[in-house]
Structure formats: structure tokens, C-alpha cells
Image (cartoon, rainbow, N blue to C red; front, top):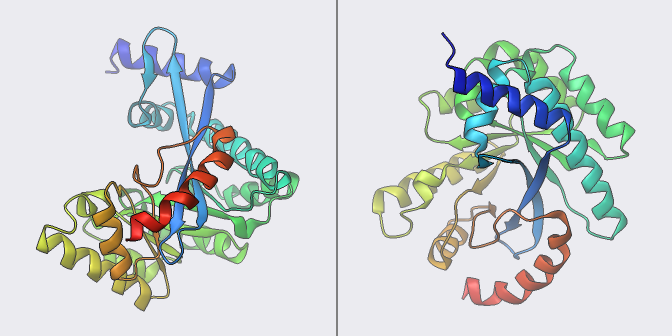
Length: 266
């Protein structure tokens, strides 16, 4: 039986979604070859009046459970792509990564919906990458056609939190991903822990061997960044680069990070 606090939180979230009380923040990802911004990951935030900030790990599962993931996904995608267009109009050229639920992929028309929103907002589909957690991808072999339709439309697919599930290699072999995101669990002990170094290098080599980009999450130290650069990891994100930013903070961050980059790579 559903607990009353859970139901109440779900109802409050539904109300927040309807009333425009959610907002998006954006975490930069940079290329390790030159430190340039390559993409921004869109992240939804909810600050509830009485509870304060509510973690996505709490409200996203409730959205999935209570049939709100569709409206949440469409709101988040529209908000993110509208913001991309504002940045483009300001002369800030970048790409966008957006997290989707496996439940959304069960909708046969979902790829068409995403393409239609891109077209409405004048965002080229090749500017968008959809991210799925590795756990979420486990039932997706059945949805190969849906995922393939995203690739045909030019939309990228990233497997998130890679290395934490049991079926990783099978997913990479069978599903049309364009990017592998290395879980922060393996990054946090770099470069001191030998086993983490071996695992991360193996994932980067595997990704490149399959023609995929490799992105490392949770990079917090210059030592981690330098090691990842030394093994030819493509992209990094994490607090060393930037915490999630409000939209107006992107331009100042770009200037600040360009000044910081030479010192980070030593």
C-alpha cells in the first residue's frame, strides 16, 4: 500500500509541474583535447515551499510511478531547447544532453514527439543527446526500433553510469549508442587506485574501439582530469569544471573557465 507521505509528495510534485515551479540548471561538459565547452547536461530542480530542495532521486521515481513522467519529460525538453535557442541567439553555440526515462521509450510516438519539438523550436536534432542510465537500458533491447529511430533522426544516445550494471557490454553491442558515460564511482579514486585506473582506461579503449565517445562524470580534481586526458578520454564533467549553472551564468563561466584551463592541464 502506498504511504501517505509518498502520495502527498507526488501530489505536491504534480502541482509544482502544473504551476511552473520546476526549473532547469545546466552542467557544462568540456573536451579534454582543448578545454572547450562541448555540451550542457540539463538537470531538473524542484524547491518545495515547506520541504526546501527535493532531490531528483526522490521525485523522478514518483513521476514514473504516478504517470507524470510524460508531462515532466515534455516540459523539461521544451524548456531546455528553448534555452538552447536563447543561447544560440546570444552567440553561444553548444549541444544539449537531456535525461530520459525508459518508460518514455515505451511510447511508440516518442521519437516523433522529440523531433517535432526540435522542429517547432528550430533546434537541429544533431544538437541533442538523450541520456539513459545503464539500469534503464536493460529492458531496452526490446525497444531497439525506437532507439534506432532516434539515430535515424540524428539524435545522439548516451549510456549513463556505465560500468555499474551487469549487462554493459551487451548493451553496447546491441544498442545504437553514440556515447559512454563512465560512472563517478570509478572516477573518484583516480589516479591513486590502480584498479580504477585499469577499469577506466579499459572503458575508454572499449568506447573508442566501438566508435563511441567516452565521457567521465564526477571529475573533482586536476589530478583526475590529467589522468583522463592522458588515456584519451574525450569529455569530462564534474565540480572541477563547473557545478550546474543557471542559464545566465553560462557566458561568465565560459570566460572564467578559459582562463583556468591552462593551469588544470599543467
